[in-house]
Length: 114
Length: 112
Image (cartoon, rainbow over all chains, first blue to last red; front, side):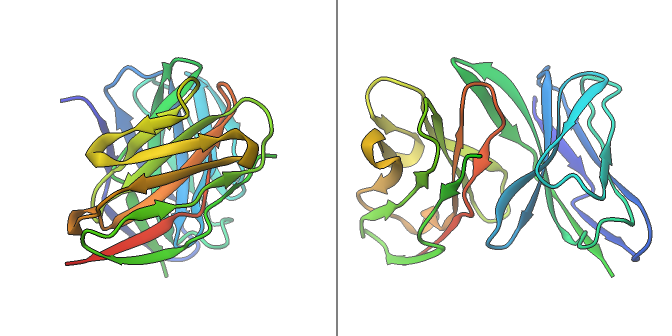
């Protein structure tokens, strides 16, 4: 069954700790993305990667880091430098569809930092 | 930079009422337009998309949207909503193979 998995569903951390969110896809998609979703803010792009070993900053990359060592995996690290880390994090991957890419989303990880 | 405006942050309707959710974008060039839906506890999923051609596009679950280029709009419609349409709806835009820009979302609550 193809899809995008994110684990865990809920994550709790103490302030000052780095935390890594997992995202795996078995859709054979080249591009992967991380978004942050806050109430009333929509989805904001953190990082994206179009090929293995390459990634670009999105609109709100400060305080986050990523790696793309395998096509299937795109983990996101929320560092202690991120001022407001508590949020719902969505991972996506995309496939070429006509004149653009069509994105598919994972179930998300809700991170709470206290 | 592109921006996407969804004018209604919260909409409350009774079952069988008609729905129209507004979406306007700022970019004046050739755009690709999307509506996504997030049902409670479920993945964000694609409702419908517009690339070119007929400006009236039909999506899943009886939804449709109309692209009006002169108004920079891509409003989502459904003639008769059901309780199961309760969800958050996001409009998104991009140009070519660029990244998507999302609106802030509209939370729709349908009362039975």
